[in-house]
Length: 219
View 1: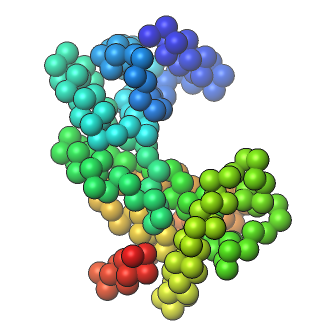
View 2: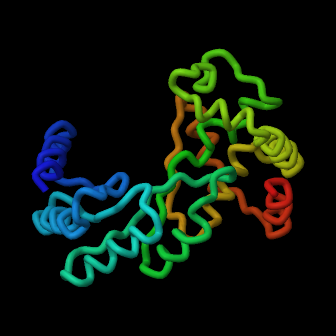
């Protein structure tokens, strides 16, 4: 409780803000009772320093526990979850999305382009100099992904996107945003033109035929 209080007030002071829209509990803490965590966030909501409570990287069971605890003690429920979600990593689909839909919890997903893999920059398994994957000290997991055979599927997706007249990035982001439980996707950019390219995805509609073809490629 003390830690959350100090960290929140420290963040507000550094950012020169009166409140934050969402306070995320990143990763489940097995050493702290969920009730204690939720009570602290509820206090901050009542004080006007936080608008909504959220979690990040929690399992479906942990999300259900948080909802049950909030209801039992009449605390503010969590309203958003922040998981990894992309064409390659779809672990939230079997359990987390159904549980979230049951309780009215939306997803604000991160790594929607799989750390750049779904931009096509690693086409053919090549690792360009200066990319994140070229530094094994900071991204061993990304190198493993590139070496795992995923790239052949990504290459096929990029070819298919070209047939549709869109970029792989547009396809990857539109594929995520077509999921009704996804409220938004957190996308990084190192250049202004990348932001413009990312925004084009909201104008892309993927037909059922296109979605079926994507599933075929990813299978």
